[in-house]
Length: 137
Image (tube, rainbow, N blue to C red; front, side, top):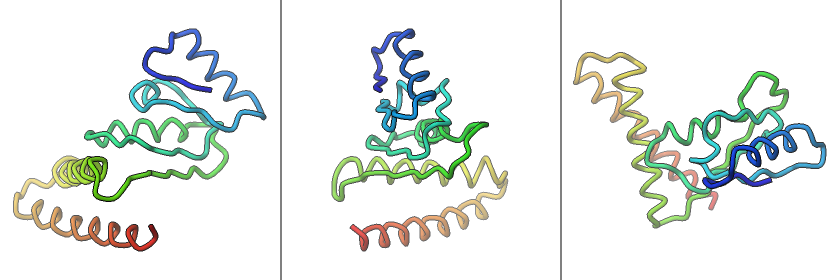
């Protein structure tokens, strides 16, 4: 099954139903922007992101399609990023945006110094994760 930006509403709906209800469907290709909102895909338990977005919420929305009421299996998320490319930089920018969101919105930090300390600590965690990912590449 496939959904892209120009997939009409009827074909989109039919593709989702077939994927959700068929035991034979095991892959559903969906562009992040076309399928990131408004659909439920409980039949999916593996999400593979090939095109990270500058906005981390777009990727979260796409991942969230599988995390719905009725999901009975663990969900695994994979992200493919090639080293030393624009996509690696996009992922880094997205992660930094998410850190700012966590520091100022989710954790309601009013004190700028406290927020900056939080950002510095979380940035170290991202660097450590990047080093680990480099080791397994």
